[in-house]
Image 1: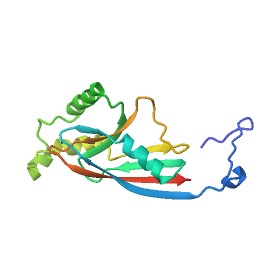
Image 2: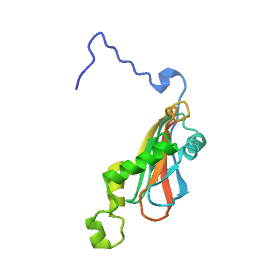
Image 3: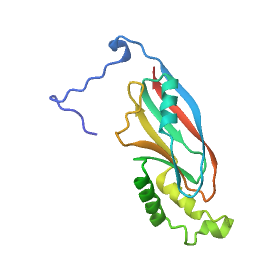
Image 4: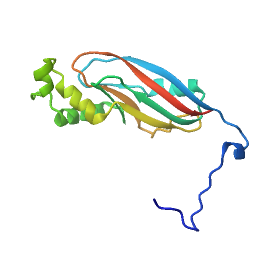
Length: 163
């Protein structure tokens, strides 16, 4: 591990030194959504921003997690062109029209859904600064339904930080 040299000073200000005691908190909730299946994408940014606001947490992190093996979360520019581009890229990455071992065992036709979800991932974690999520100008937090059928999903949200 690299250590700072004499010219590089690192300072840490504790809550007590800053003069304002801040209380660590954990806020839990869920975001409920209904999807159309087959790479349907849902912008969950407004719901998460509202939860951060409701939590009263000013500085910390927010983590959103999808239980299940055929859903995924990411950040992206949520506009029709990028949505279509991402759907096409997902299809190239794990085509729906090839045989998967999962299909052979379970006969449910969603082997590609599991592979796609594994590539993208089941969660996204974002910072909270001054009570807000500091997203880029064109950046949204998006749930991607990768199953072959419409689903009702409950996304688990954990917000941890200081108020």
